[in-house]
Length: 127
Length: 130
Image (cartoon, rainbow over all chains, first blue to last red; front, side, top):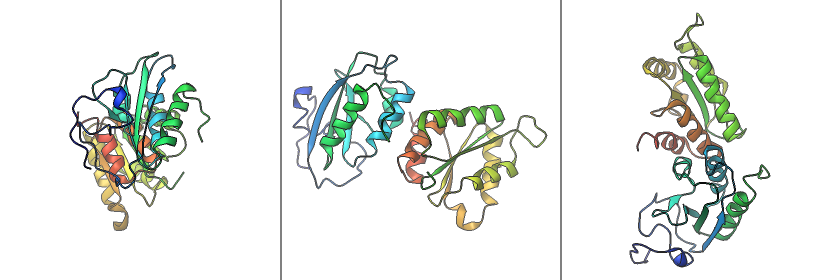
């Protein structure tokens, strides 16, 4: 990775900067494909990002090879969308906006799928 | 379903073990095999090596099995059960250092995504790591 260390990047930078440039994450997966995708969606689940939605979100995120970072808009740190413990600890309340940045070959479909899951209020339609 | 790491829940109380397994089943779904056991052979509180061994073997997966335990005896009896497994299985089983309910849900979520035994253990233990 040749990206220079970036301290506090803002949502506007999402499409250009890797989410983990400020904070190292698990070094899993090759960086061959550098596709990036970002997006945000409003959380409509009545109780916010509690245990069950968190499990659904991480299960879906794990289906993609891309690195996926997630946070509540305004939060300082990006977290790994594939870590159920971290996603549960987000404590995103109802009506908050969740944003994603994915890096990897399937970054775009990953972001779209996660947005759809949250927008659908974590419906059971996924496989 | 059976291609994933399996989860065994060992509590001193059969009700706790069953409740934790129910939570996994509801929250994570059917993509992961979960077995549970609890109580001693007289039906009281405690753990029983034979029951643990039975639970492990009931959901054995070539990808391995992660055991979640509650208090001291559950861990030592689980260790004994692991020692009683055939040698070729002993390398594919771990006892997680994690709170039993939360650990089981985290571990199962990781297992349901096809994670390796080491990843499943790490997911469960992430909670204790702070």
